[in-house]
Structures are given as structure tokens and as C-alpha cells.
Amino acid sequence: MAPKDAAVAATDRWTDPDGFRAPAGLVHAWLRGTNQTLCGVPLSKARLHRFPHVQWVDARPATGRDADEVREVCRRCAAGMGEKRDSRPWTRTNPRP
Ligand SMILES: [Zn+2]
Image (cartoon, rainbow, N blue to C red; front, side, top):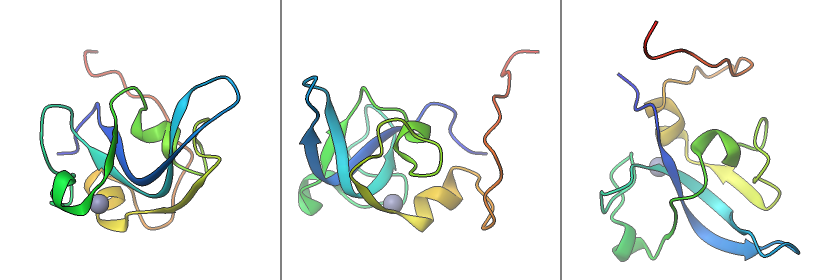
């Protein structure tokens, strides 16, 4: 089952004109409180930057508002987040019907 509330870890970062720290380069899904990405890359060893304030969906170039500098999305993390190879429009699901 895919995690519902993943944040982002990325190989690079940039700060937009408003001072918002956003991910750049290759992005992974990251669960807050863990020290590795969803696909198992150790954050410190890989020198990844953490973005606890950025939601995974916002770092996806197709859908995200914080993805201007994102060049690549980790496929294993995308798969781990429950995405099909042919991405569909993202729809919100209610965890508690
Ligand atoms: Zn990954």
C-alpha cells in the first residue's frame, strides 16, 4: 500500500524569488522521520536534500507547483507511490470515507 503523505528528497535545491526552498534535479519520495528515501537510498550517504514542506505530488513535473527545477523523478519511488507507468491525472482520495 502506498504511503499517503510522502515528502520529497532531491539531489539539488533552489530558492525561488519568494524565498521558497524547492527541490531540483532528481527527486525521490521521502517519508518524514526516516533517513532514507522510499526506494531505499540513504539520505546522508547520497547527500540528498530533504524537503519536509514539499509534498510528493507538488514535486512531480506533470502536476506539481514546486517542480520548476525538477529534472527527473525516481521511477522506483513513483512506482512505490502507486503510480502506473502511464500516469493518469491525479485525483484526491479520501482516506476516511
Ligand atoms: Zn527513489
